[in-house]
Image (cartoon, rainbow, N blue to C red):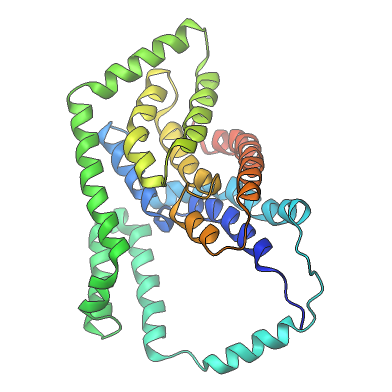
Length: 307
């Protein structure tokens, strides 16, 4: 049976991950960190889950539709005719058997947790409480045990990084480092007579392509998000627009290189993509996403009243 080479599929999934992570606030760890750091600078976004989804929906969905088509042209699979694929997939599903009780419990718990995240502000339930409710249900019903929780090293690693990075960002703000840095950059931008939309474009592009110097997204957010958000505010960019756009950018540059995010390292490490292709396609898709988000975002965010 002919099979589509995994290289094309891997590349497609990797590039689509940035837009899918941008679509939901809870889709990636760095999204929540961005919101926390924005709060440190006094940028409070009401009903964050809904606000995030509304602002990201149109550009993210367009990007998710366009990306597979573009990659199919730029990086086509060697085998394109796979008539046996549906039968093989049906056989695999049959082998897996029906959905188990624990799996149904997991689905119901996830729906409950996400619902509490979405409507938490309206009913007075913080996102942390929503997460604990979901975890408690899974533990009490035996879907997970404590050893399962302890084995999730990446989750504990993220929790530790969150504590350190949020604390560092808070101290930099309290000591005036962020305001001093943003003031210097803002004065330089003003000396060039840039309007806030022009400053917005320059700062967003700089924040994006600086990621070539970073391994991972959380570290980039911890090091630069607060500083760049402060620069936006000092340049007169509307606060909510600046905070959301920087956060979306944090997801979009996740496929820029093979070291730019945790998922990119996994995809490249599987051995199906050549390094020159990773860099070439990462740069091309970065430009494509900049056009999609820049053009559609300009009109969509104006319609939503973000500026």
